[in-house]
Every structure is written in structure tokens, then in C-alpha cells.
Length: 179
Image (cartoon, rainbow, N blue to C red; front, top):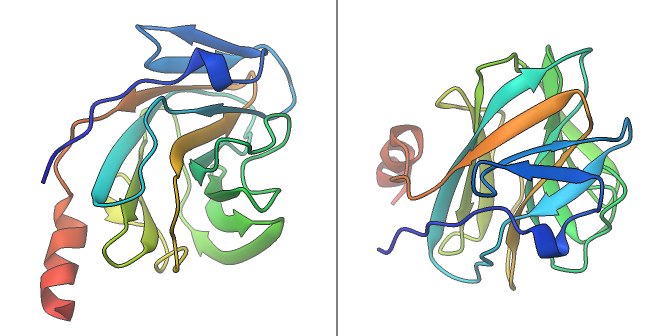
């Protein structure tokens, strides 16, 4: 299985997004949520990437997930039907798609935390982790079509993208039990 390396895409991002570190690190100069996509879209295979929280001030709700290329860029990820996301604060998380909030789960993020996104087209699922542990149940099923890694954040958050990673143990061990 090939492992994809990619960065954030300045060409598709909201103009308030600020890029650094060869487009691997993003923040925002707005108090409103703004969306940025990864440069590589996926439509098959199993893909995993992580985002480390470099800055986290005043308890904002960054969102992490996947989106279609035409997703709205000026609202939180998951507000429209073109994105599937987990948004998280310092205490808990929710899944959101088409502005429907589900599966409130205890456990949040702080500076230094790692959020993992696992997109599995074989099972057609999207699963999230925080600090290497699965966060909540499988977030979304019936995933298909061309999907791009995506994040929404405001000026209180800075994240760095890590790609080219192996599928994490929390997922592969569970997958072997299920099959």
C-alpha cells in the first residue's frame, strides 16, 4: 500500500489562512473559522495523517476531516454537505456533517496534542484519534468519491500536518479482529 505525502494547498484555501513551513503549518488571521484543504485528494485505499496542535488559545473549536474540493471555505468544516469532520475543544469532541452534530465524546485537545484522521475506502469509513487513541466510534460510513484532507481553524489555533505515516495500531489491531 502506497503512503501519500502531501502539504496544505494555498490555491484552494480561504484567503485568511496563513501558511508556513513549506505549507505544512497553517493558522489564520480571522476570529472566524476558515477552511484549508490538503493538496492531494483520495478516492481509494486507506490513508492516515496527523495534525499536531502548535497553538491553542481561548478554547476554540478547530475541525479536522475530509471535504470535497467545492466545500464552503468561510464556515466551520462540516457545516455543509461537502465535508465530514470532527470538531474538538479542550474538553470534548463532536462529529459534524451537513451541520448535524453527533457523538459527543469526552476528551479534548491542548497545545501539543495530535489529531489523527483515518480515511478507509476499503471499508468506506472515516475514523478519528486524539493522541493515538480512537476518539469516539467510527465517525462516518459510506465514504466515497474524491475527498481531500481538510481543516478549519481560527486565529487562536495553529496546526502542523504530518503525512507519510503508517496506519496506526489502534486501527490495524481492531481491523484484524473484525475481518
